[in-house]
Image (cartoon, rainbow, N blue to C red; front, top):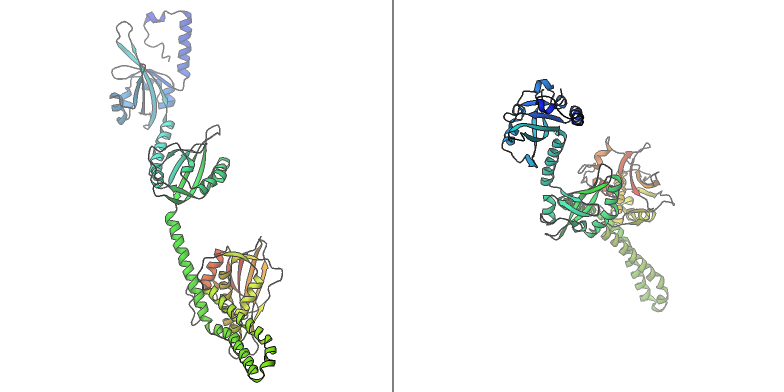
Length: 508
């Protein structure tokens, strides 16, 4: 069925061969086009004729749709818009362009975009018919609607979103970003460095944007800057690179989540943990009060004895005594220094301070701690041994926290080995090695009665096997080890007794 031949007056059929060939080509183009070309009566918009594309677009055959009114197929919401020439209908140079929903044969609606032109009698200017070209724009409309929905979500998102050109200028900000950063709606085309602190902008230039350009995205922490509040805003930042169909970089988007509340909570938690750690050290020192008193009393007693010996010599033979007191005076000085060192260790251990990691020699630190625990071991009839290898690498850790961990494990081992009436002393000793990952494994072993059936219970807060224990020492020790990137574990030894092991990063 040729839409150019139907209802033609006889006068129009008398054309030159060139005109006939031209009309034939046009008719063939219309027949083959994927766009639907239709003719309509001007009063009720009935289909006079239509191209075969109607079957592909609407599901009707040509014969089925001819005679039907287009008004019958419009979506109810769209037909009134068309009649009233709503904003969805545009007019330019005698052509109407209209986007609307049209009912298909199976009952569902599809989006069409139609361009229509009126055909008038050249002599009377009477409206004869309307010629319409329609195409399916469902995919475009659905994409536009999805983009509008996403835009509304983006604008109302609590995340701070910015769009950035390849030359690092901000082209658009959502409401949350404008509000948090103290910017107005008309603040656009800003340099990207206006949104970030200098250090974070340097990270964006050197790492984030290049990685996003190469790999598609980058994620990390950064600090944005609020001009209104004149403060830095900690954020978790994601940078995405968006490309054109020909894989050219079109723009970046940055999505930032304000971490202020989380950072404040982390700071409070850290402060709380420091208070707990400090309290644990005080508790440990309280448990060792008797031993410390004995430890300090020994050098003080020695000093008193040396002084009294010198006094007696001076009373009996003053001249010869002056020559003989040099060595006792040196012993007095060394003994007083030892007492002062014990006091310093106690003060350092109980002092509340920020963690300070440094390179530490485990051999030196363990020797000091074994000396510190000597009186407690003697009291419980326990033998202490240092079995650390000589070629052990240094570790990177906080001295006070590491001392707290080892002291807690050593005291637990000493108390576990205490047995009334036992003739030969039981042992508590330390071992160390390195694993394949280069970490140092430190173990405290004892010959005590061993651990309960579920050793993990020992690391629960307030769980204790001691009559007067608080159940916090091992829980805090595990937390401190995990802060250093290691793990603290407990197990029973096959030969009897317990073994507590933890890892620390070795110095590179």
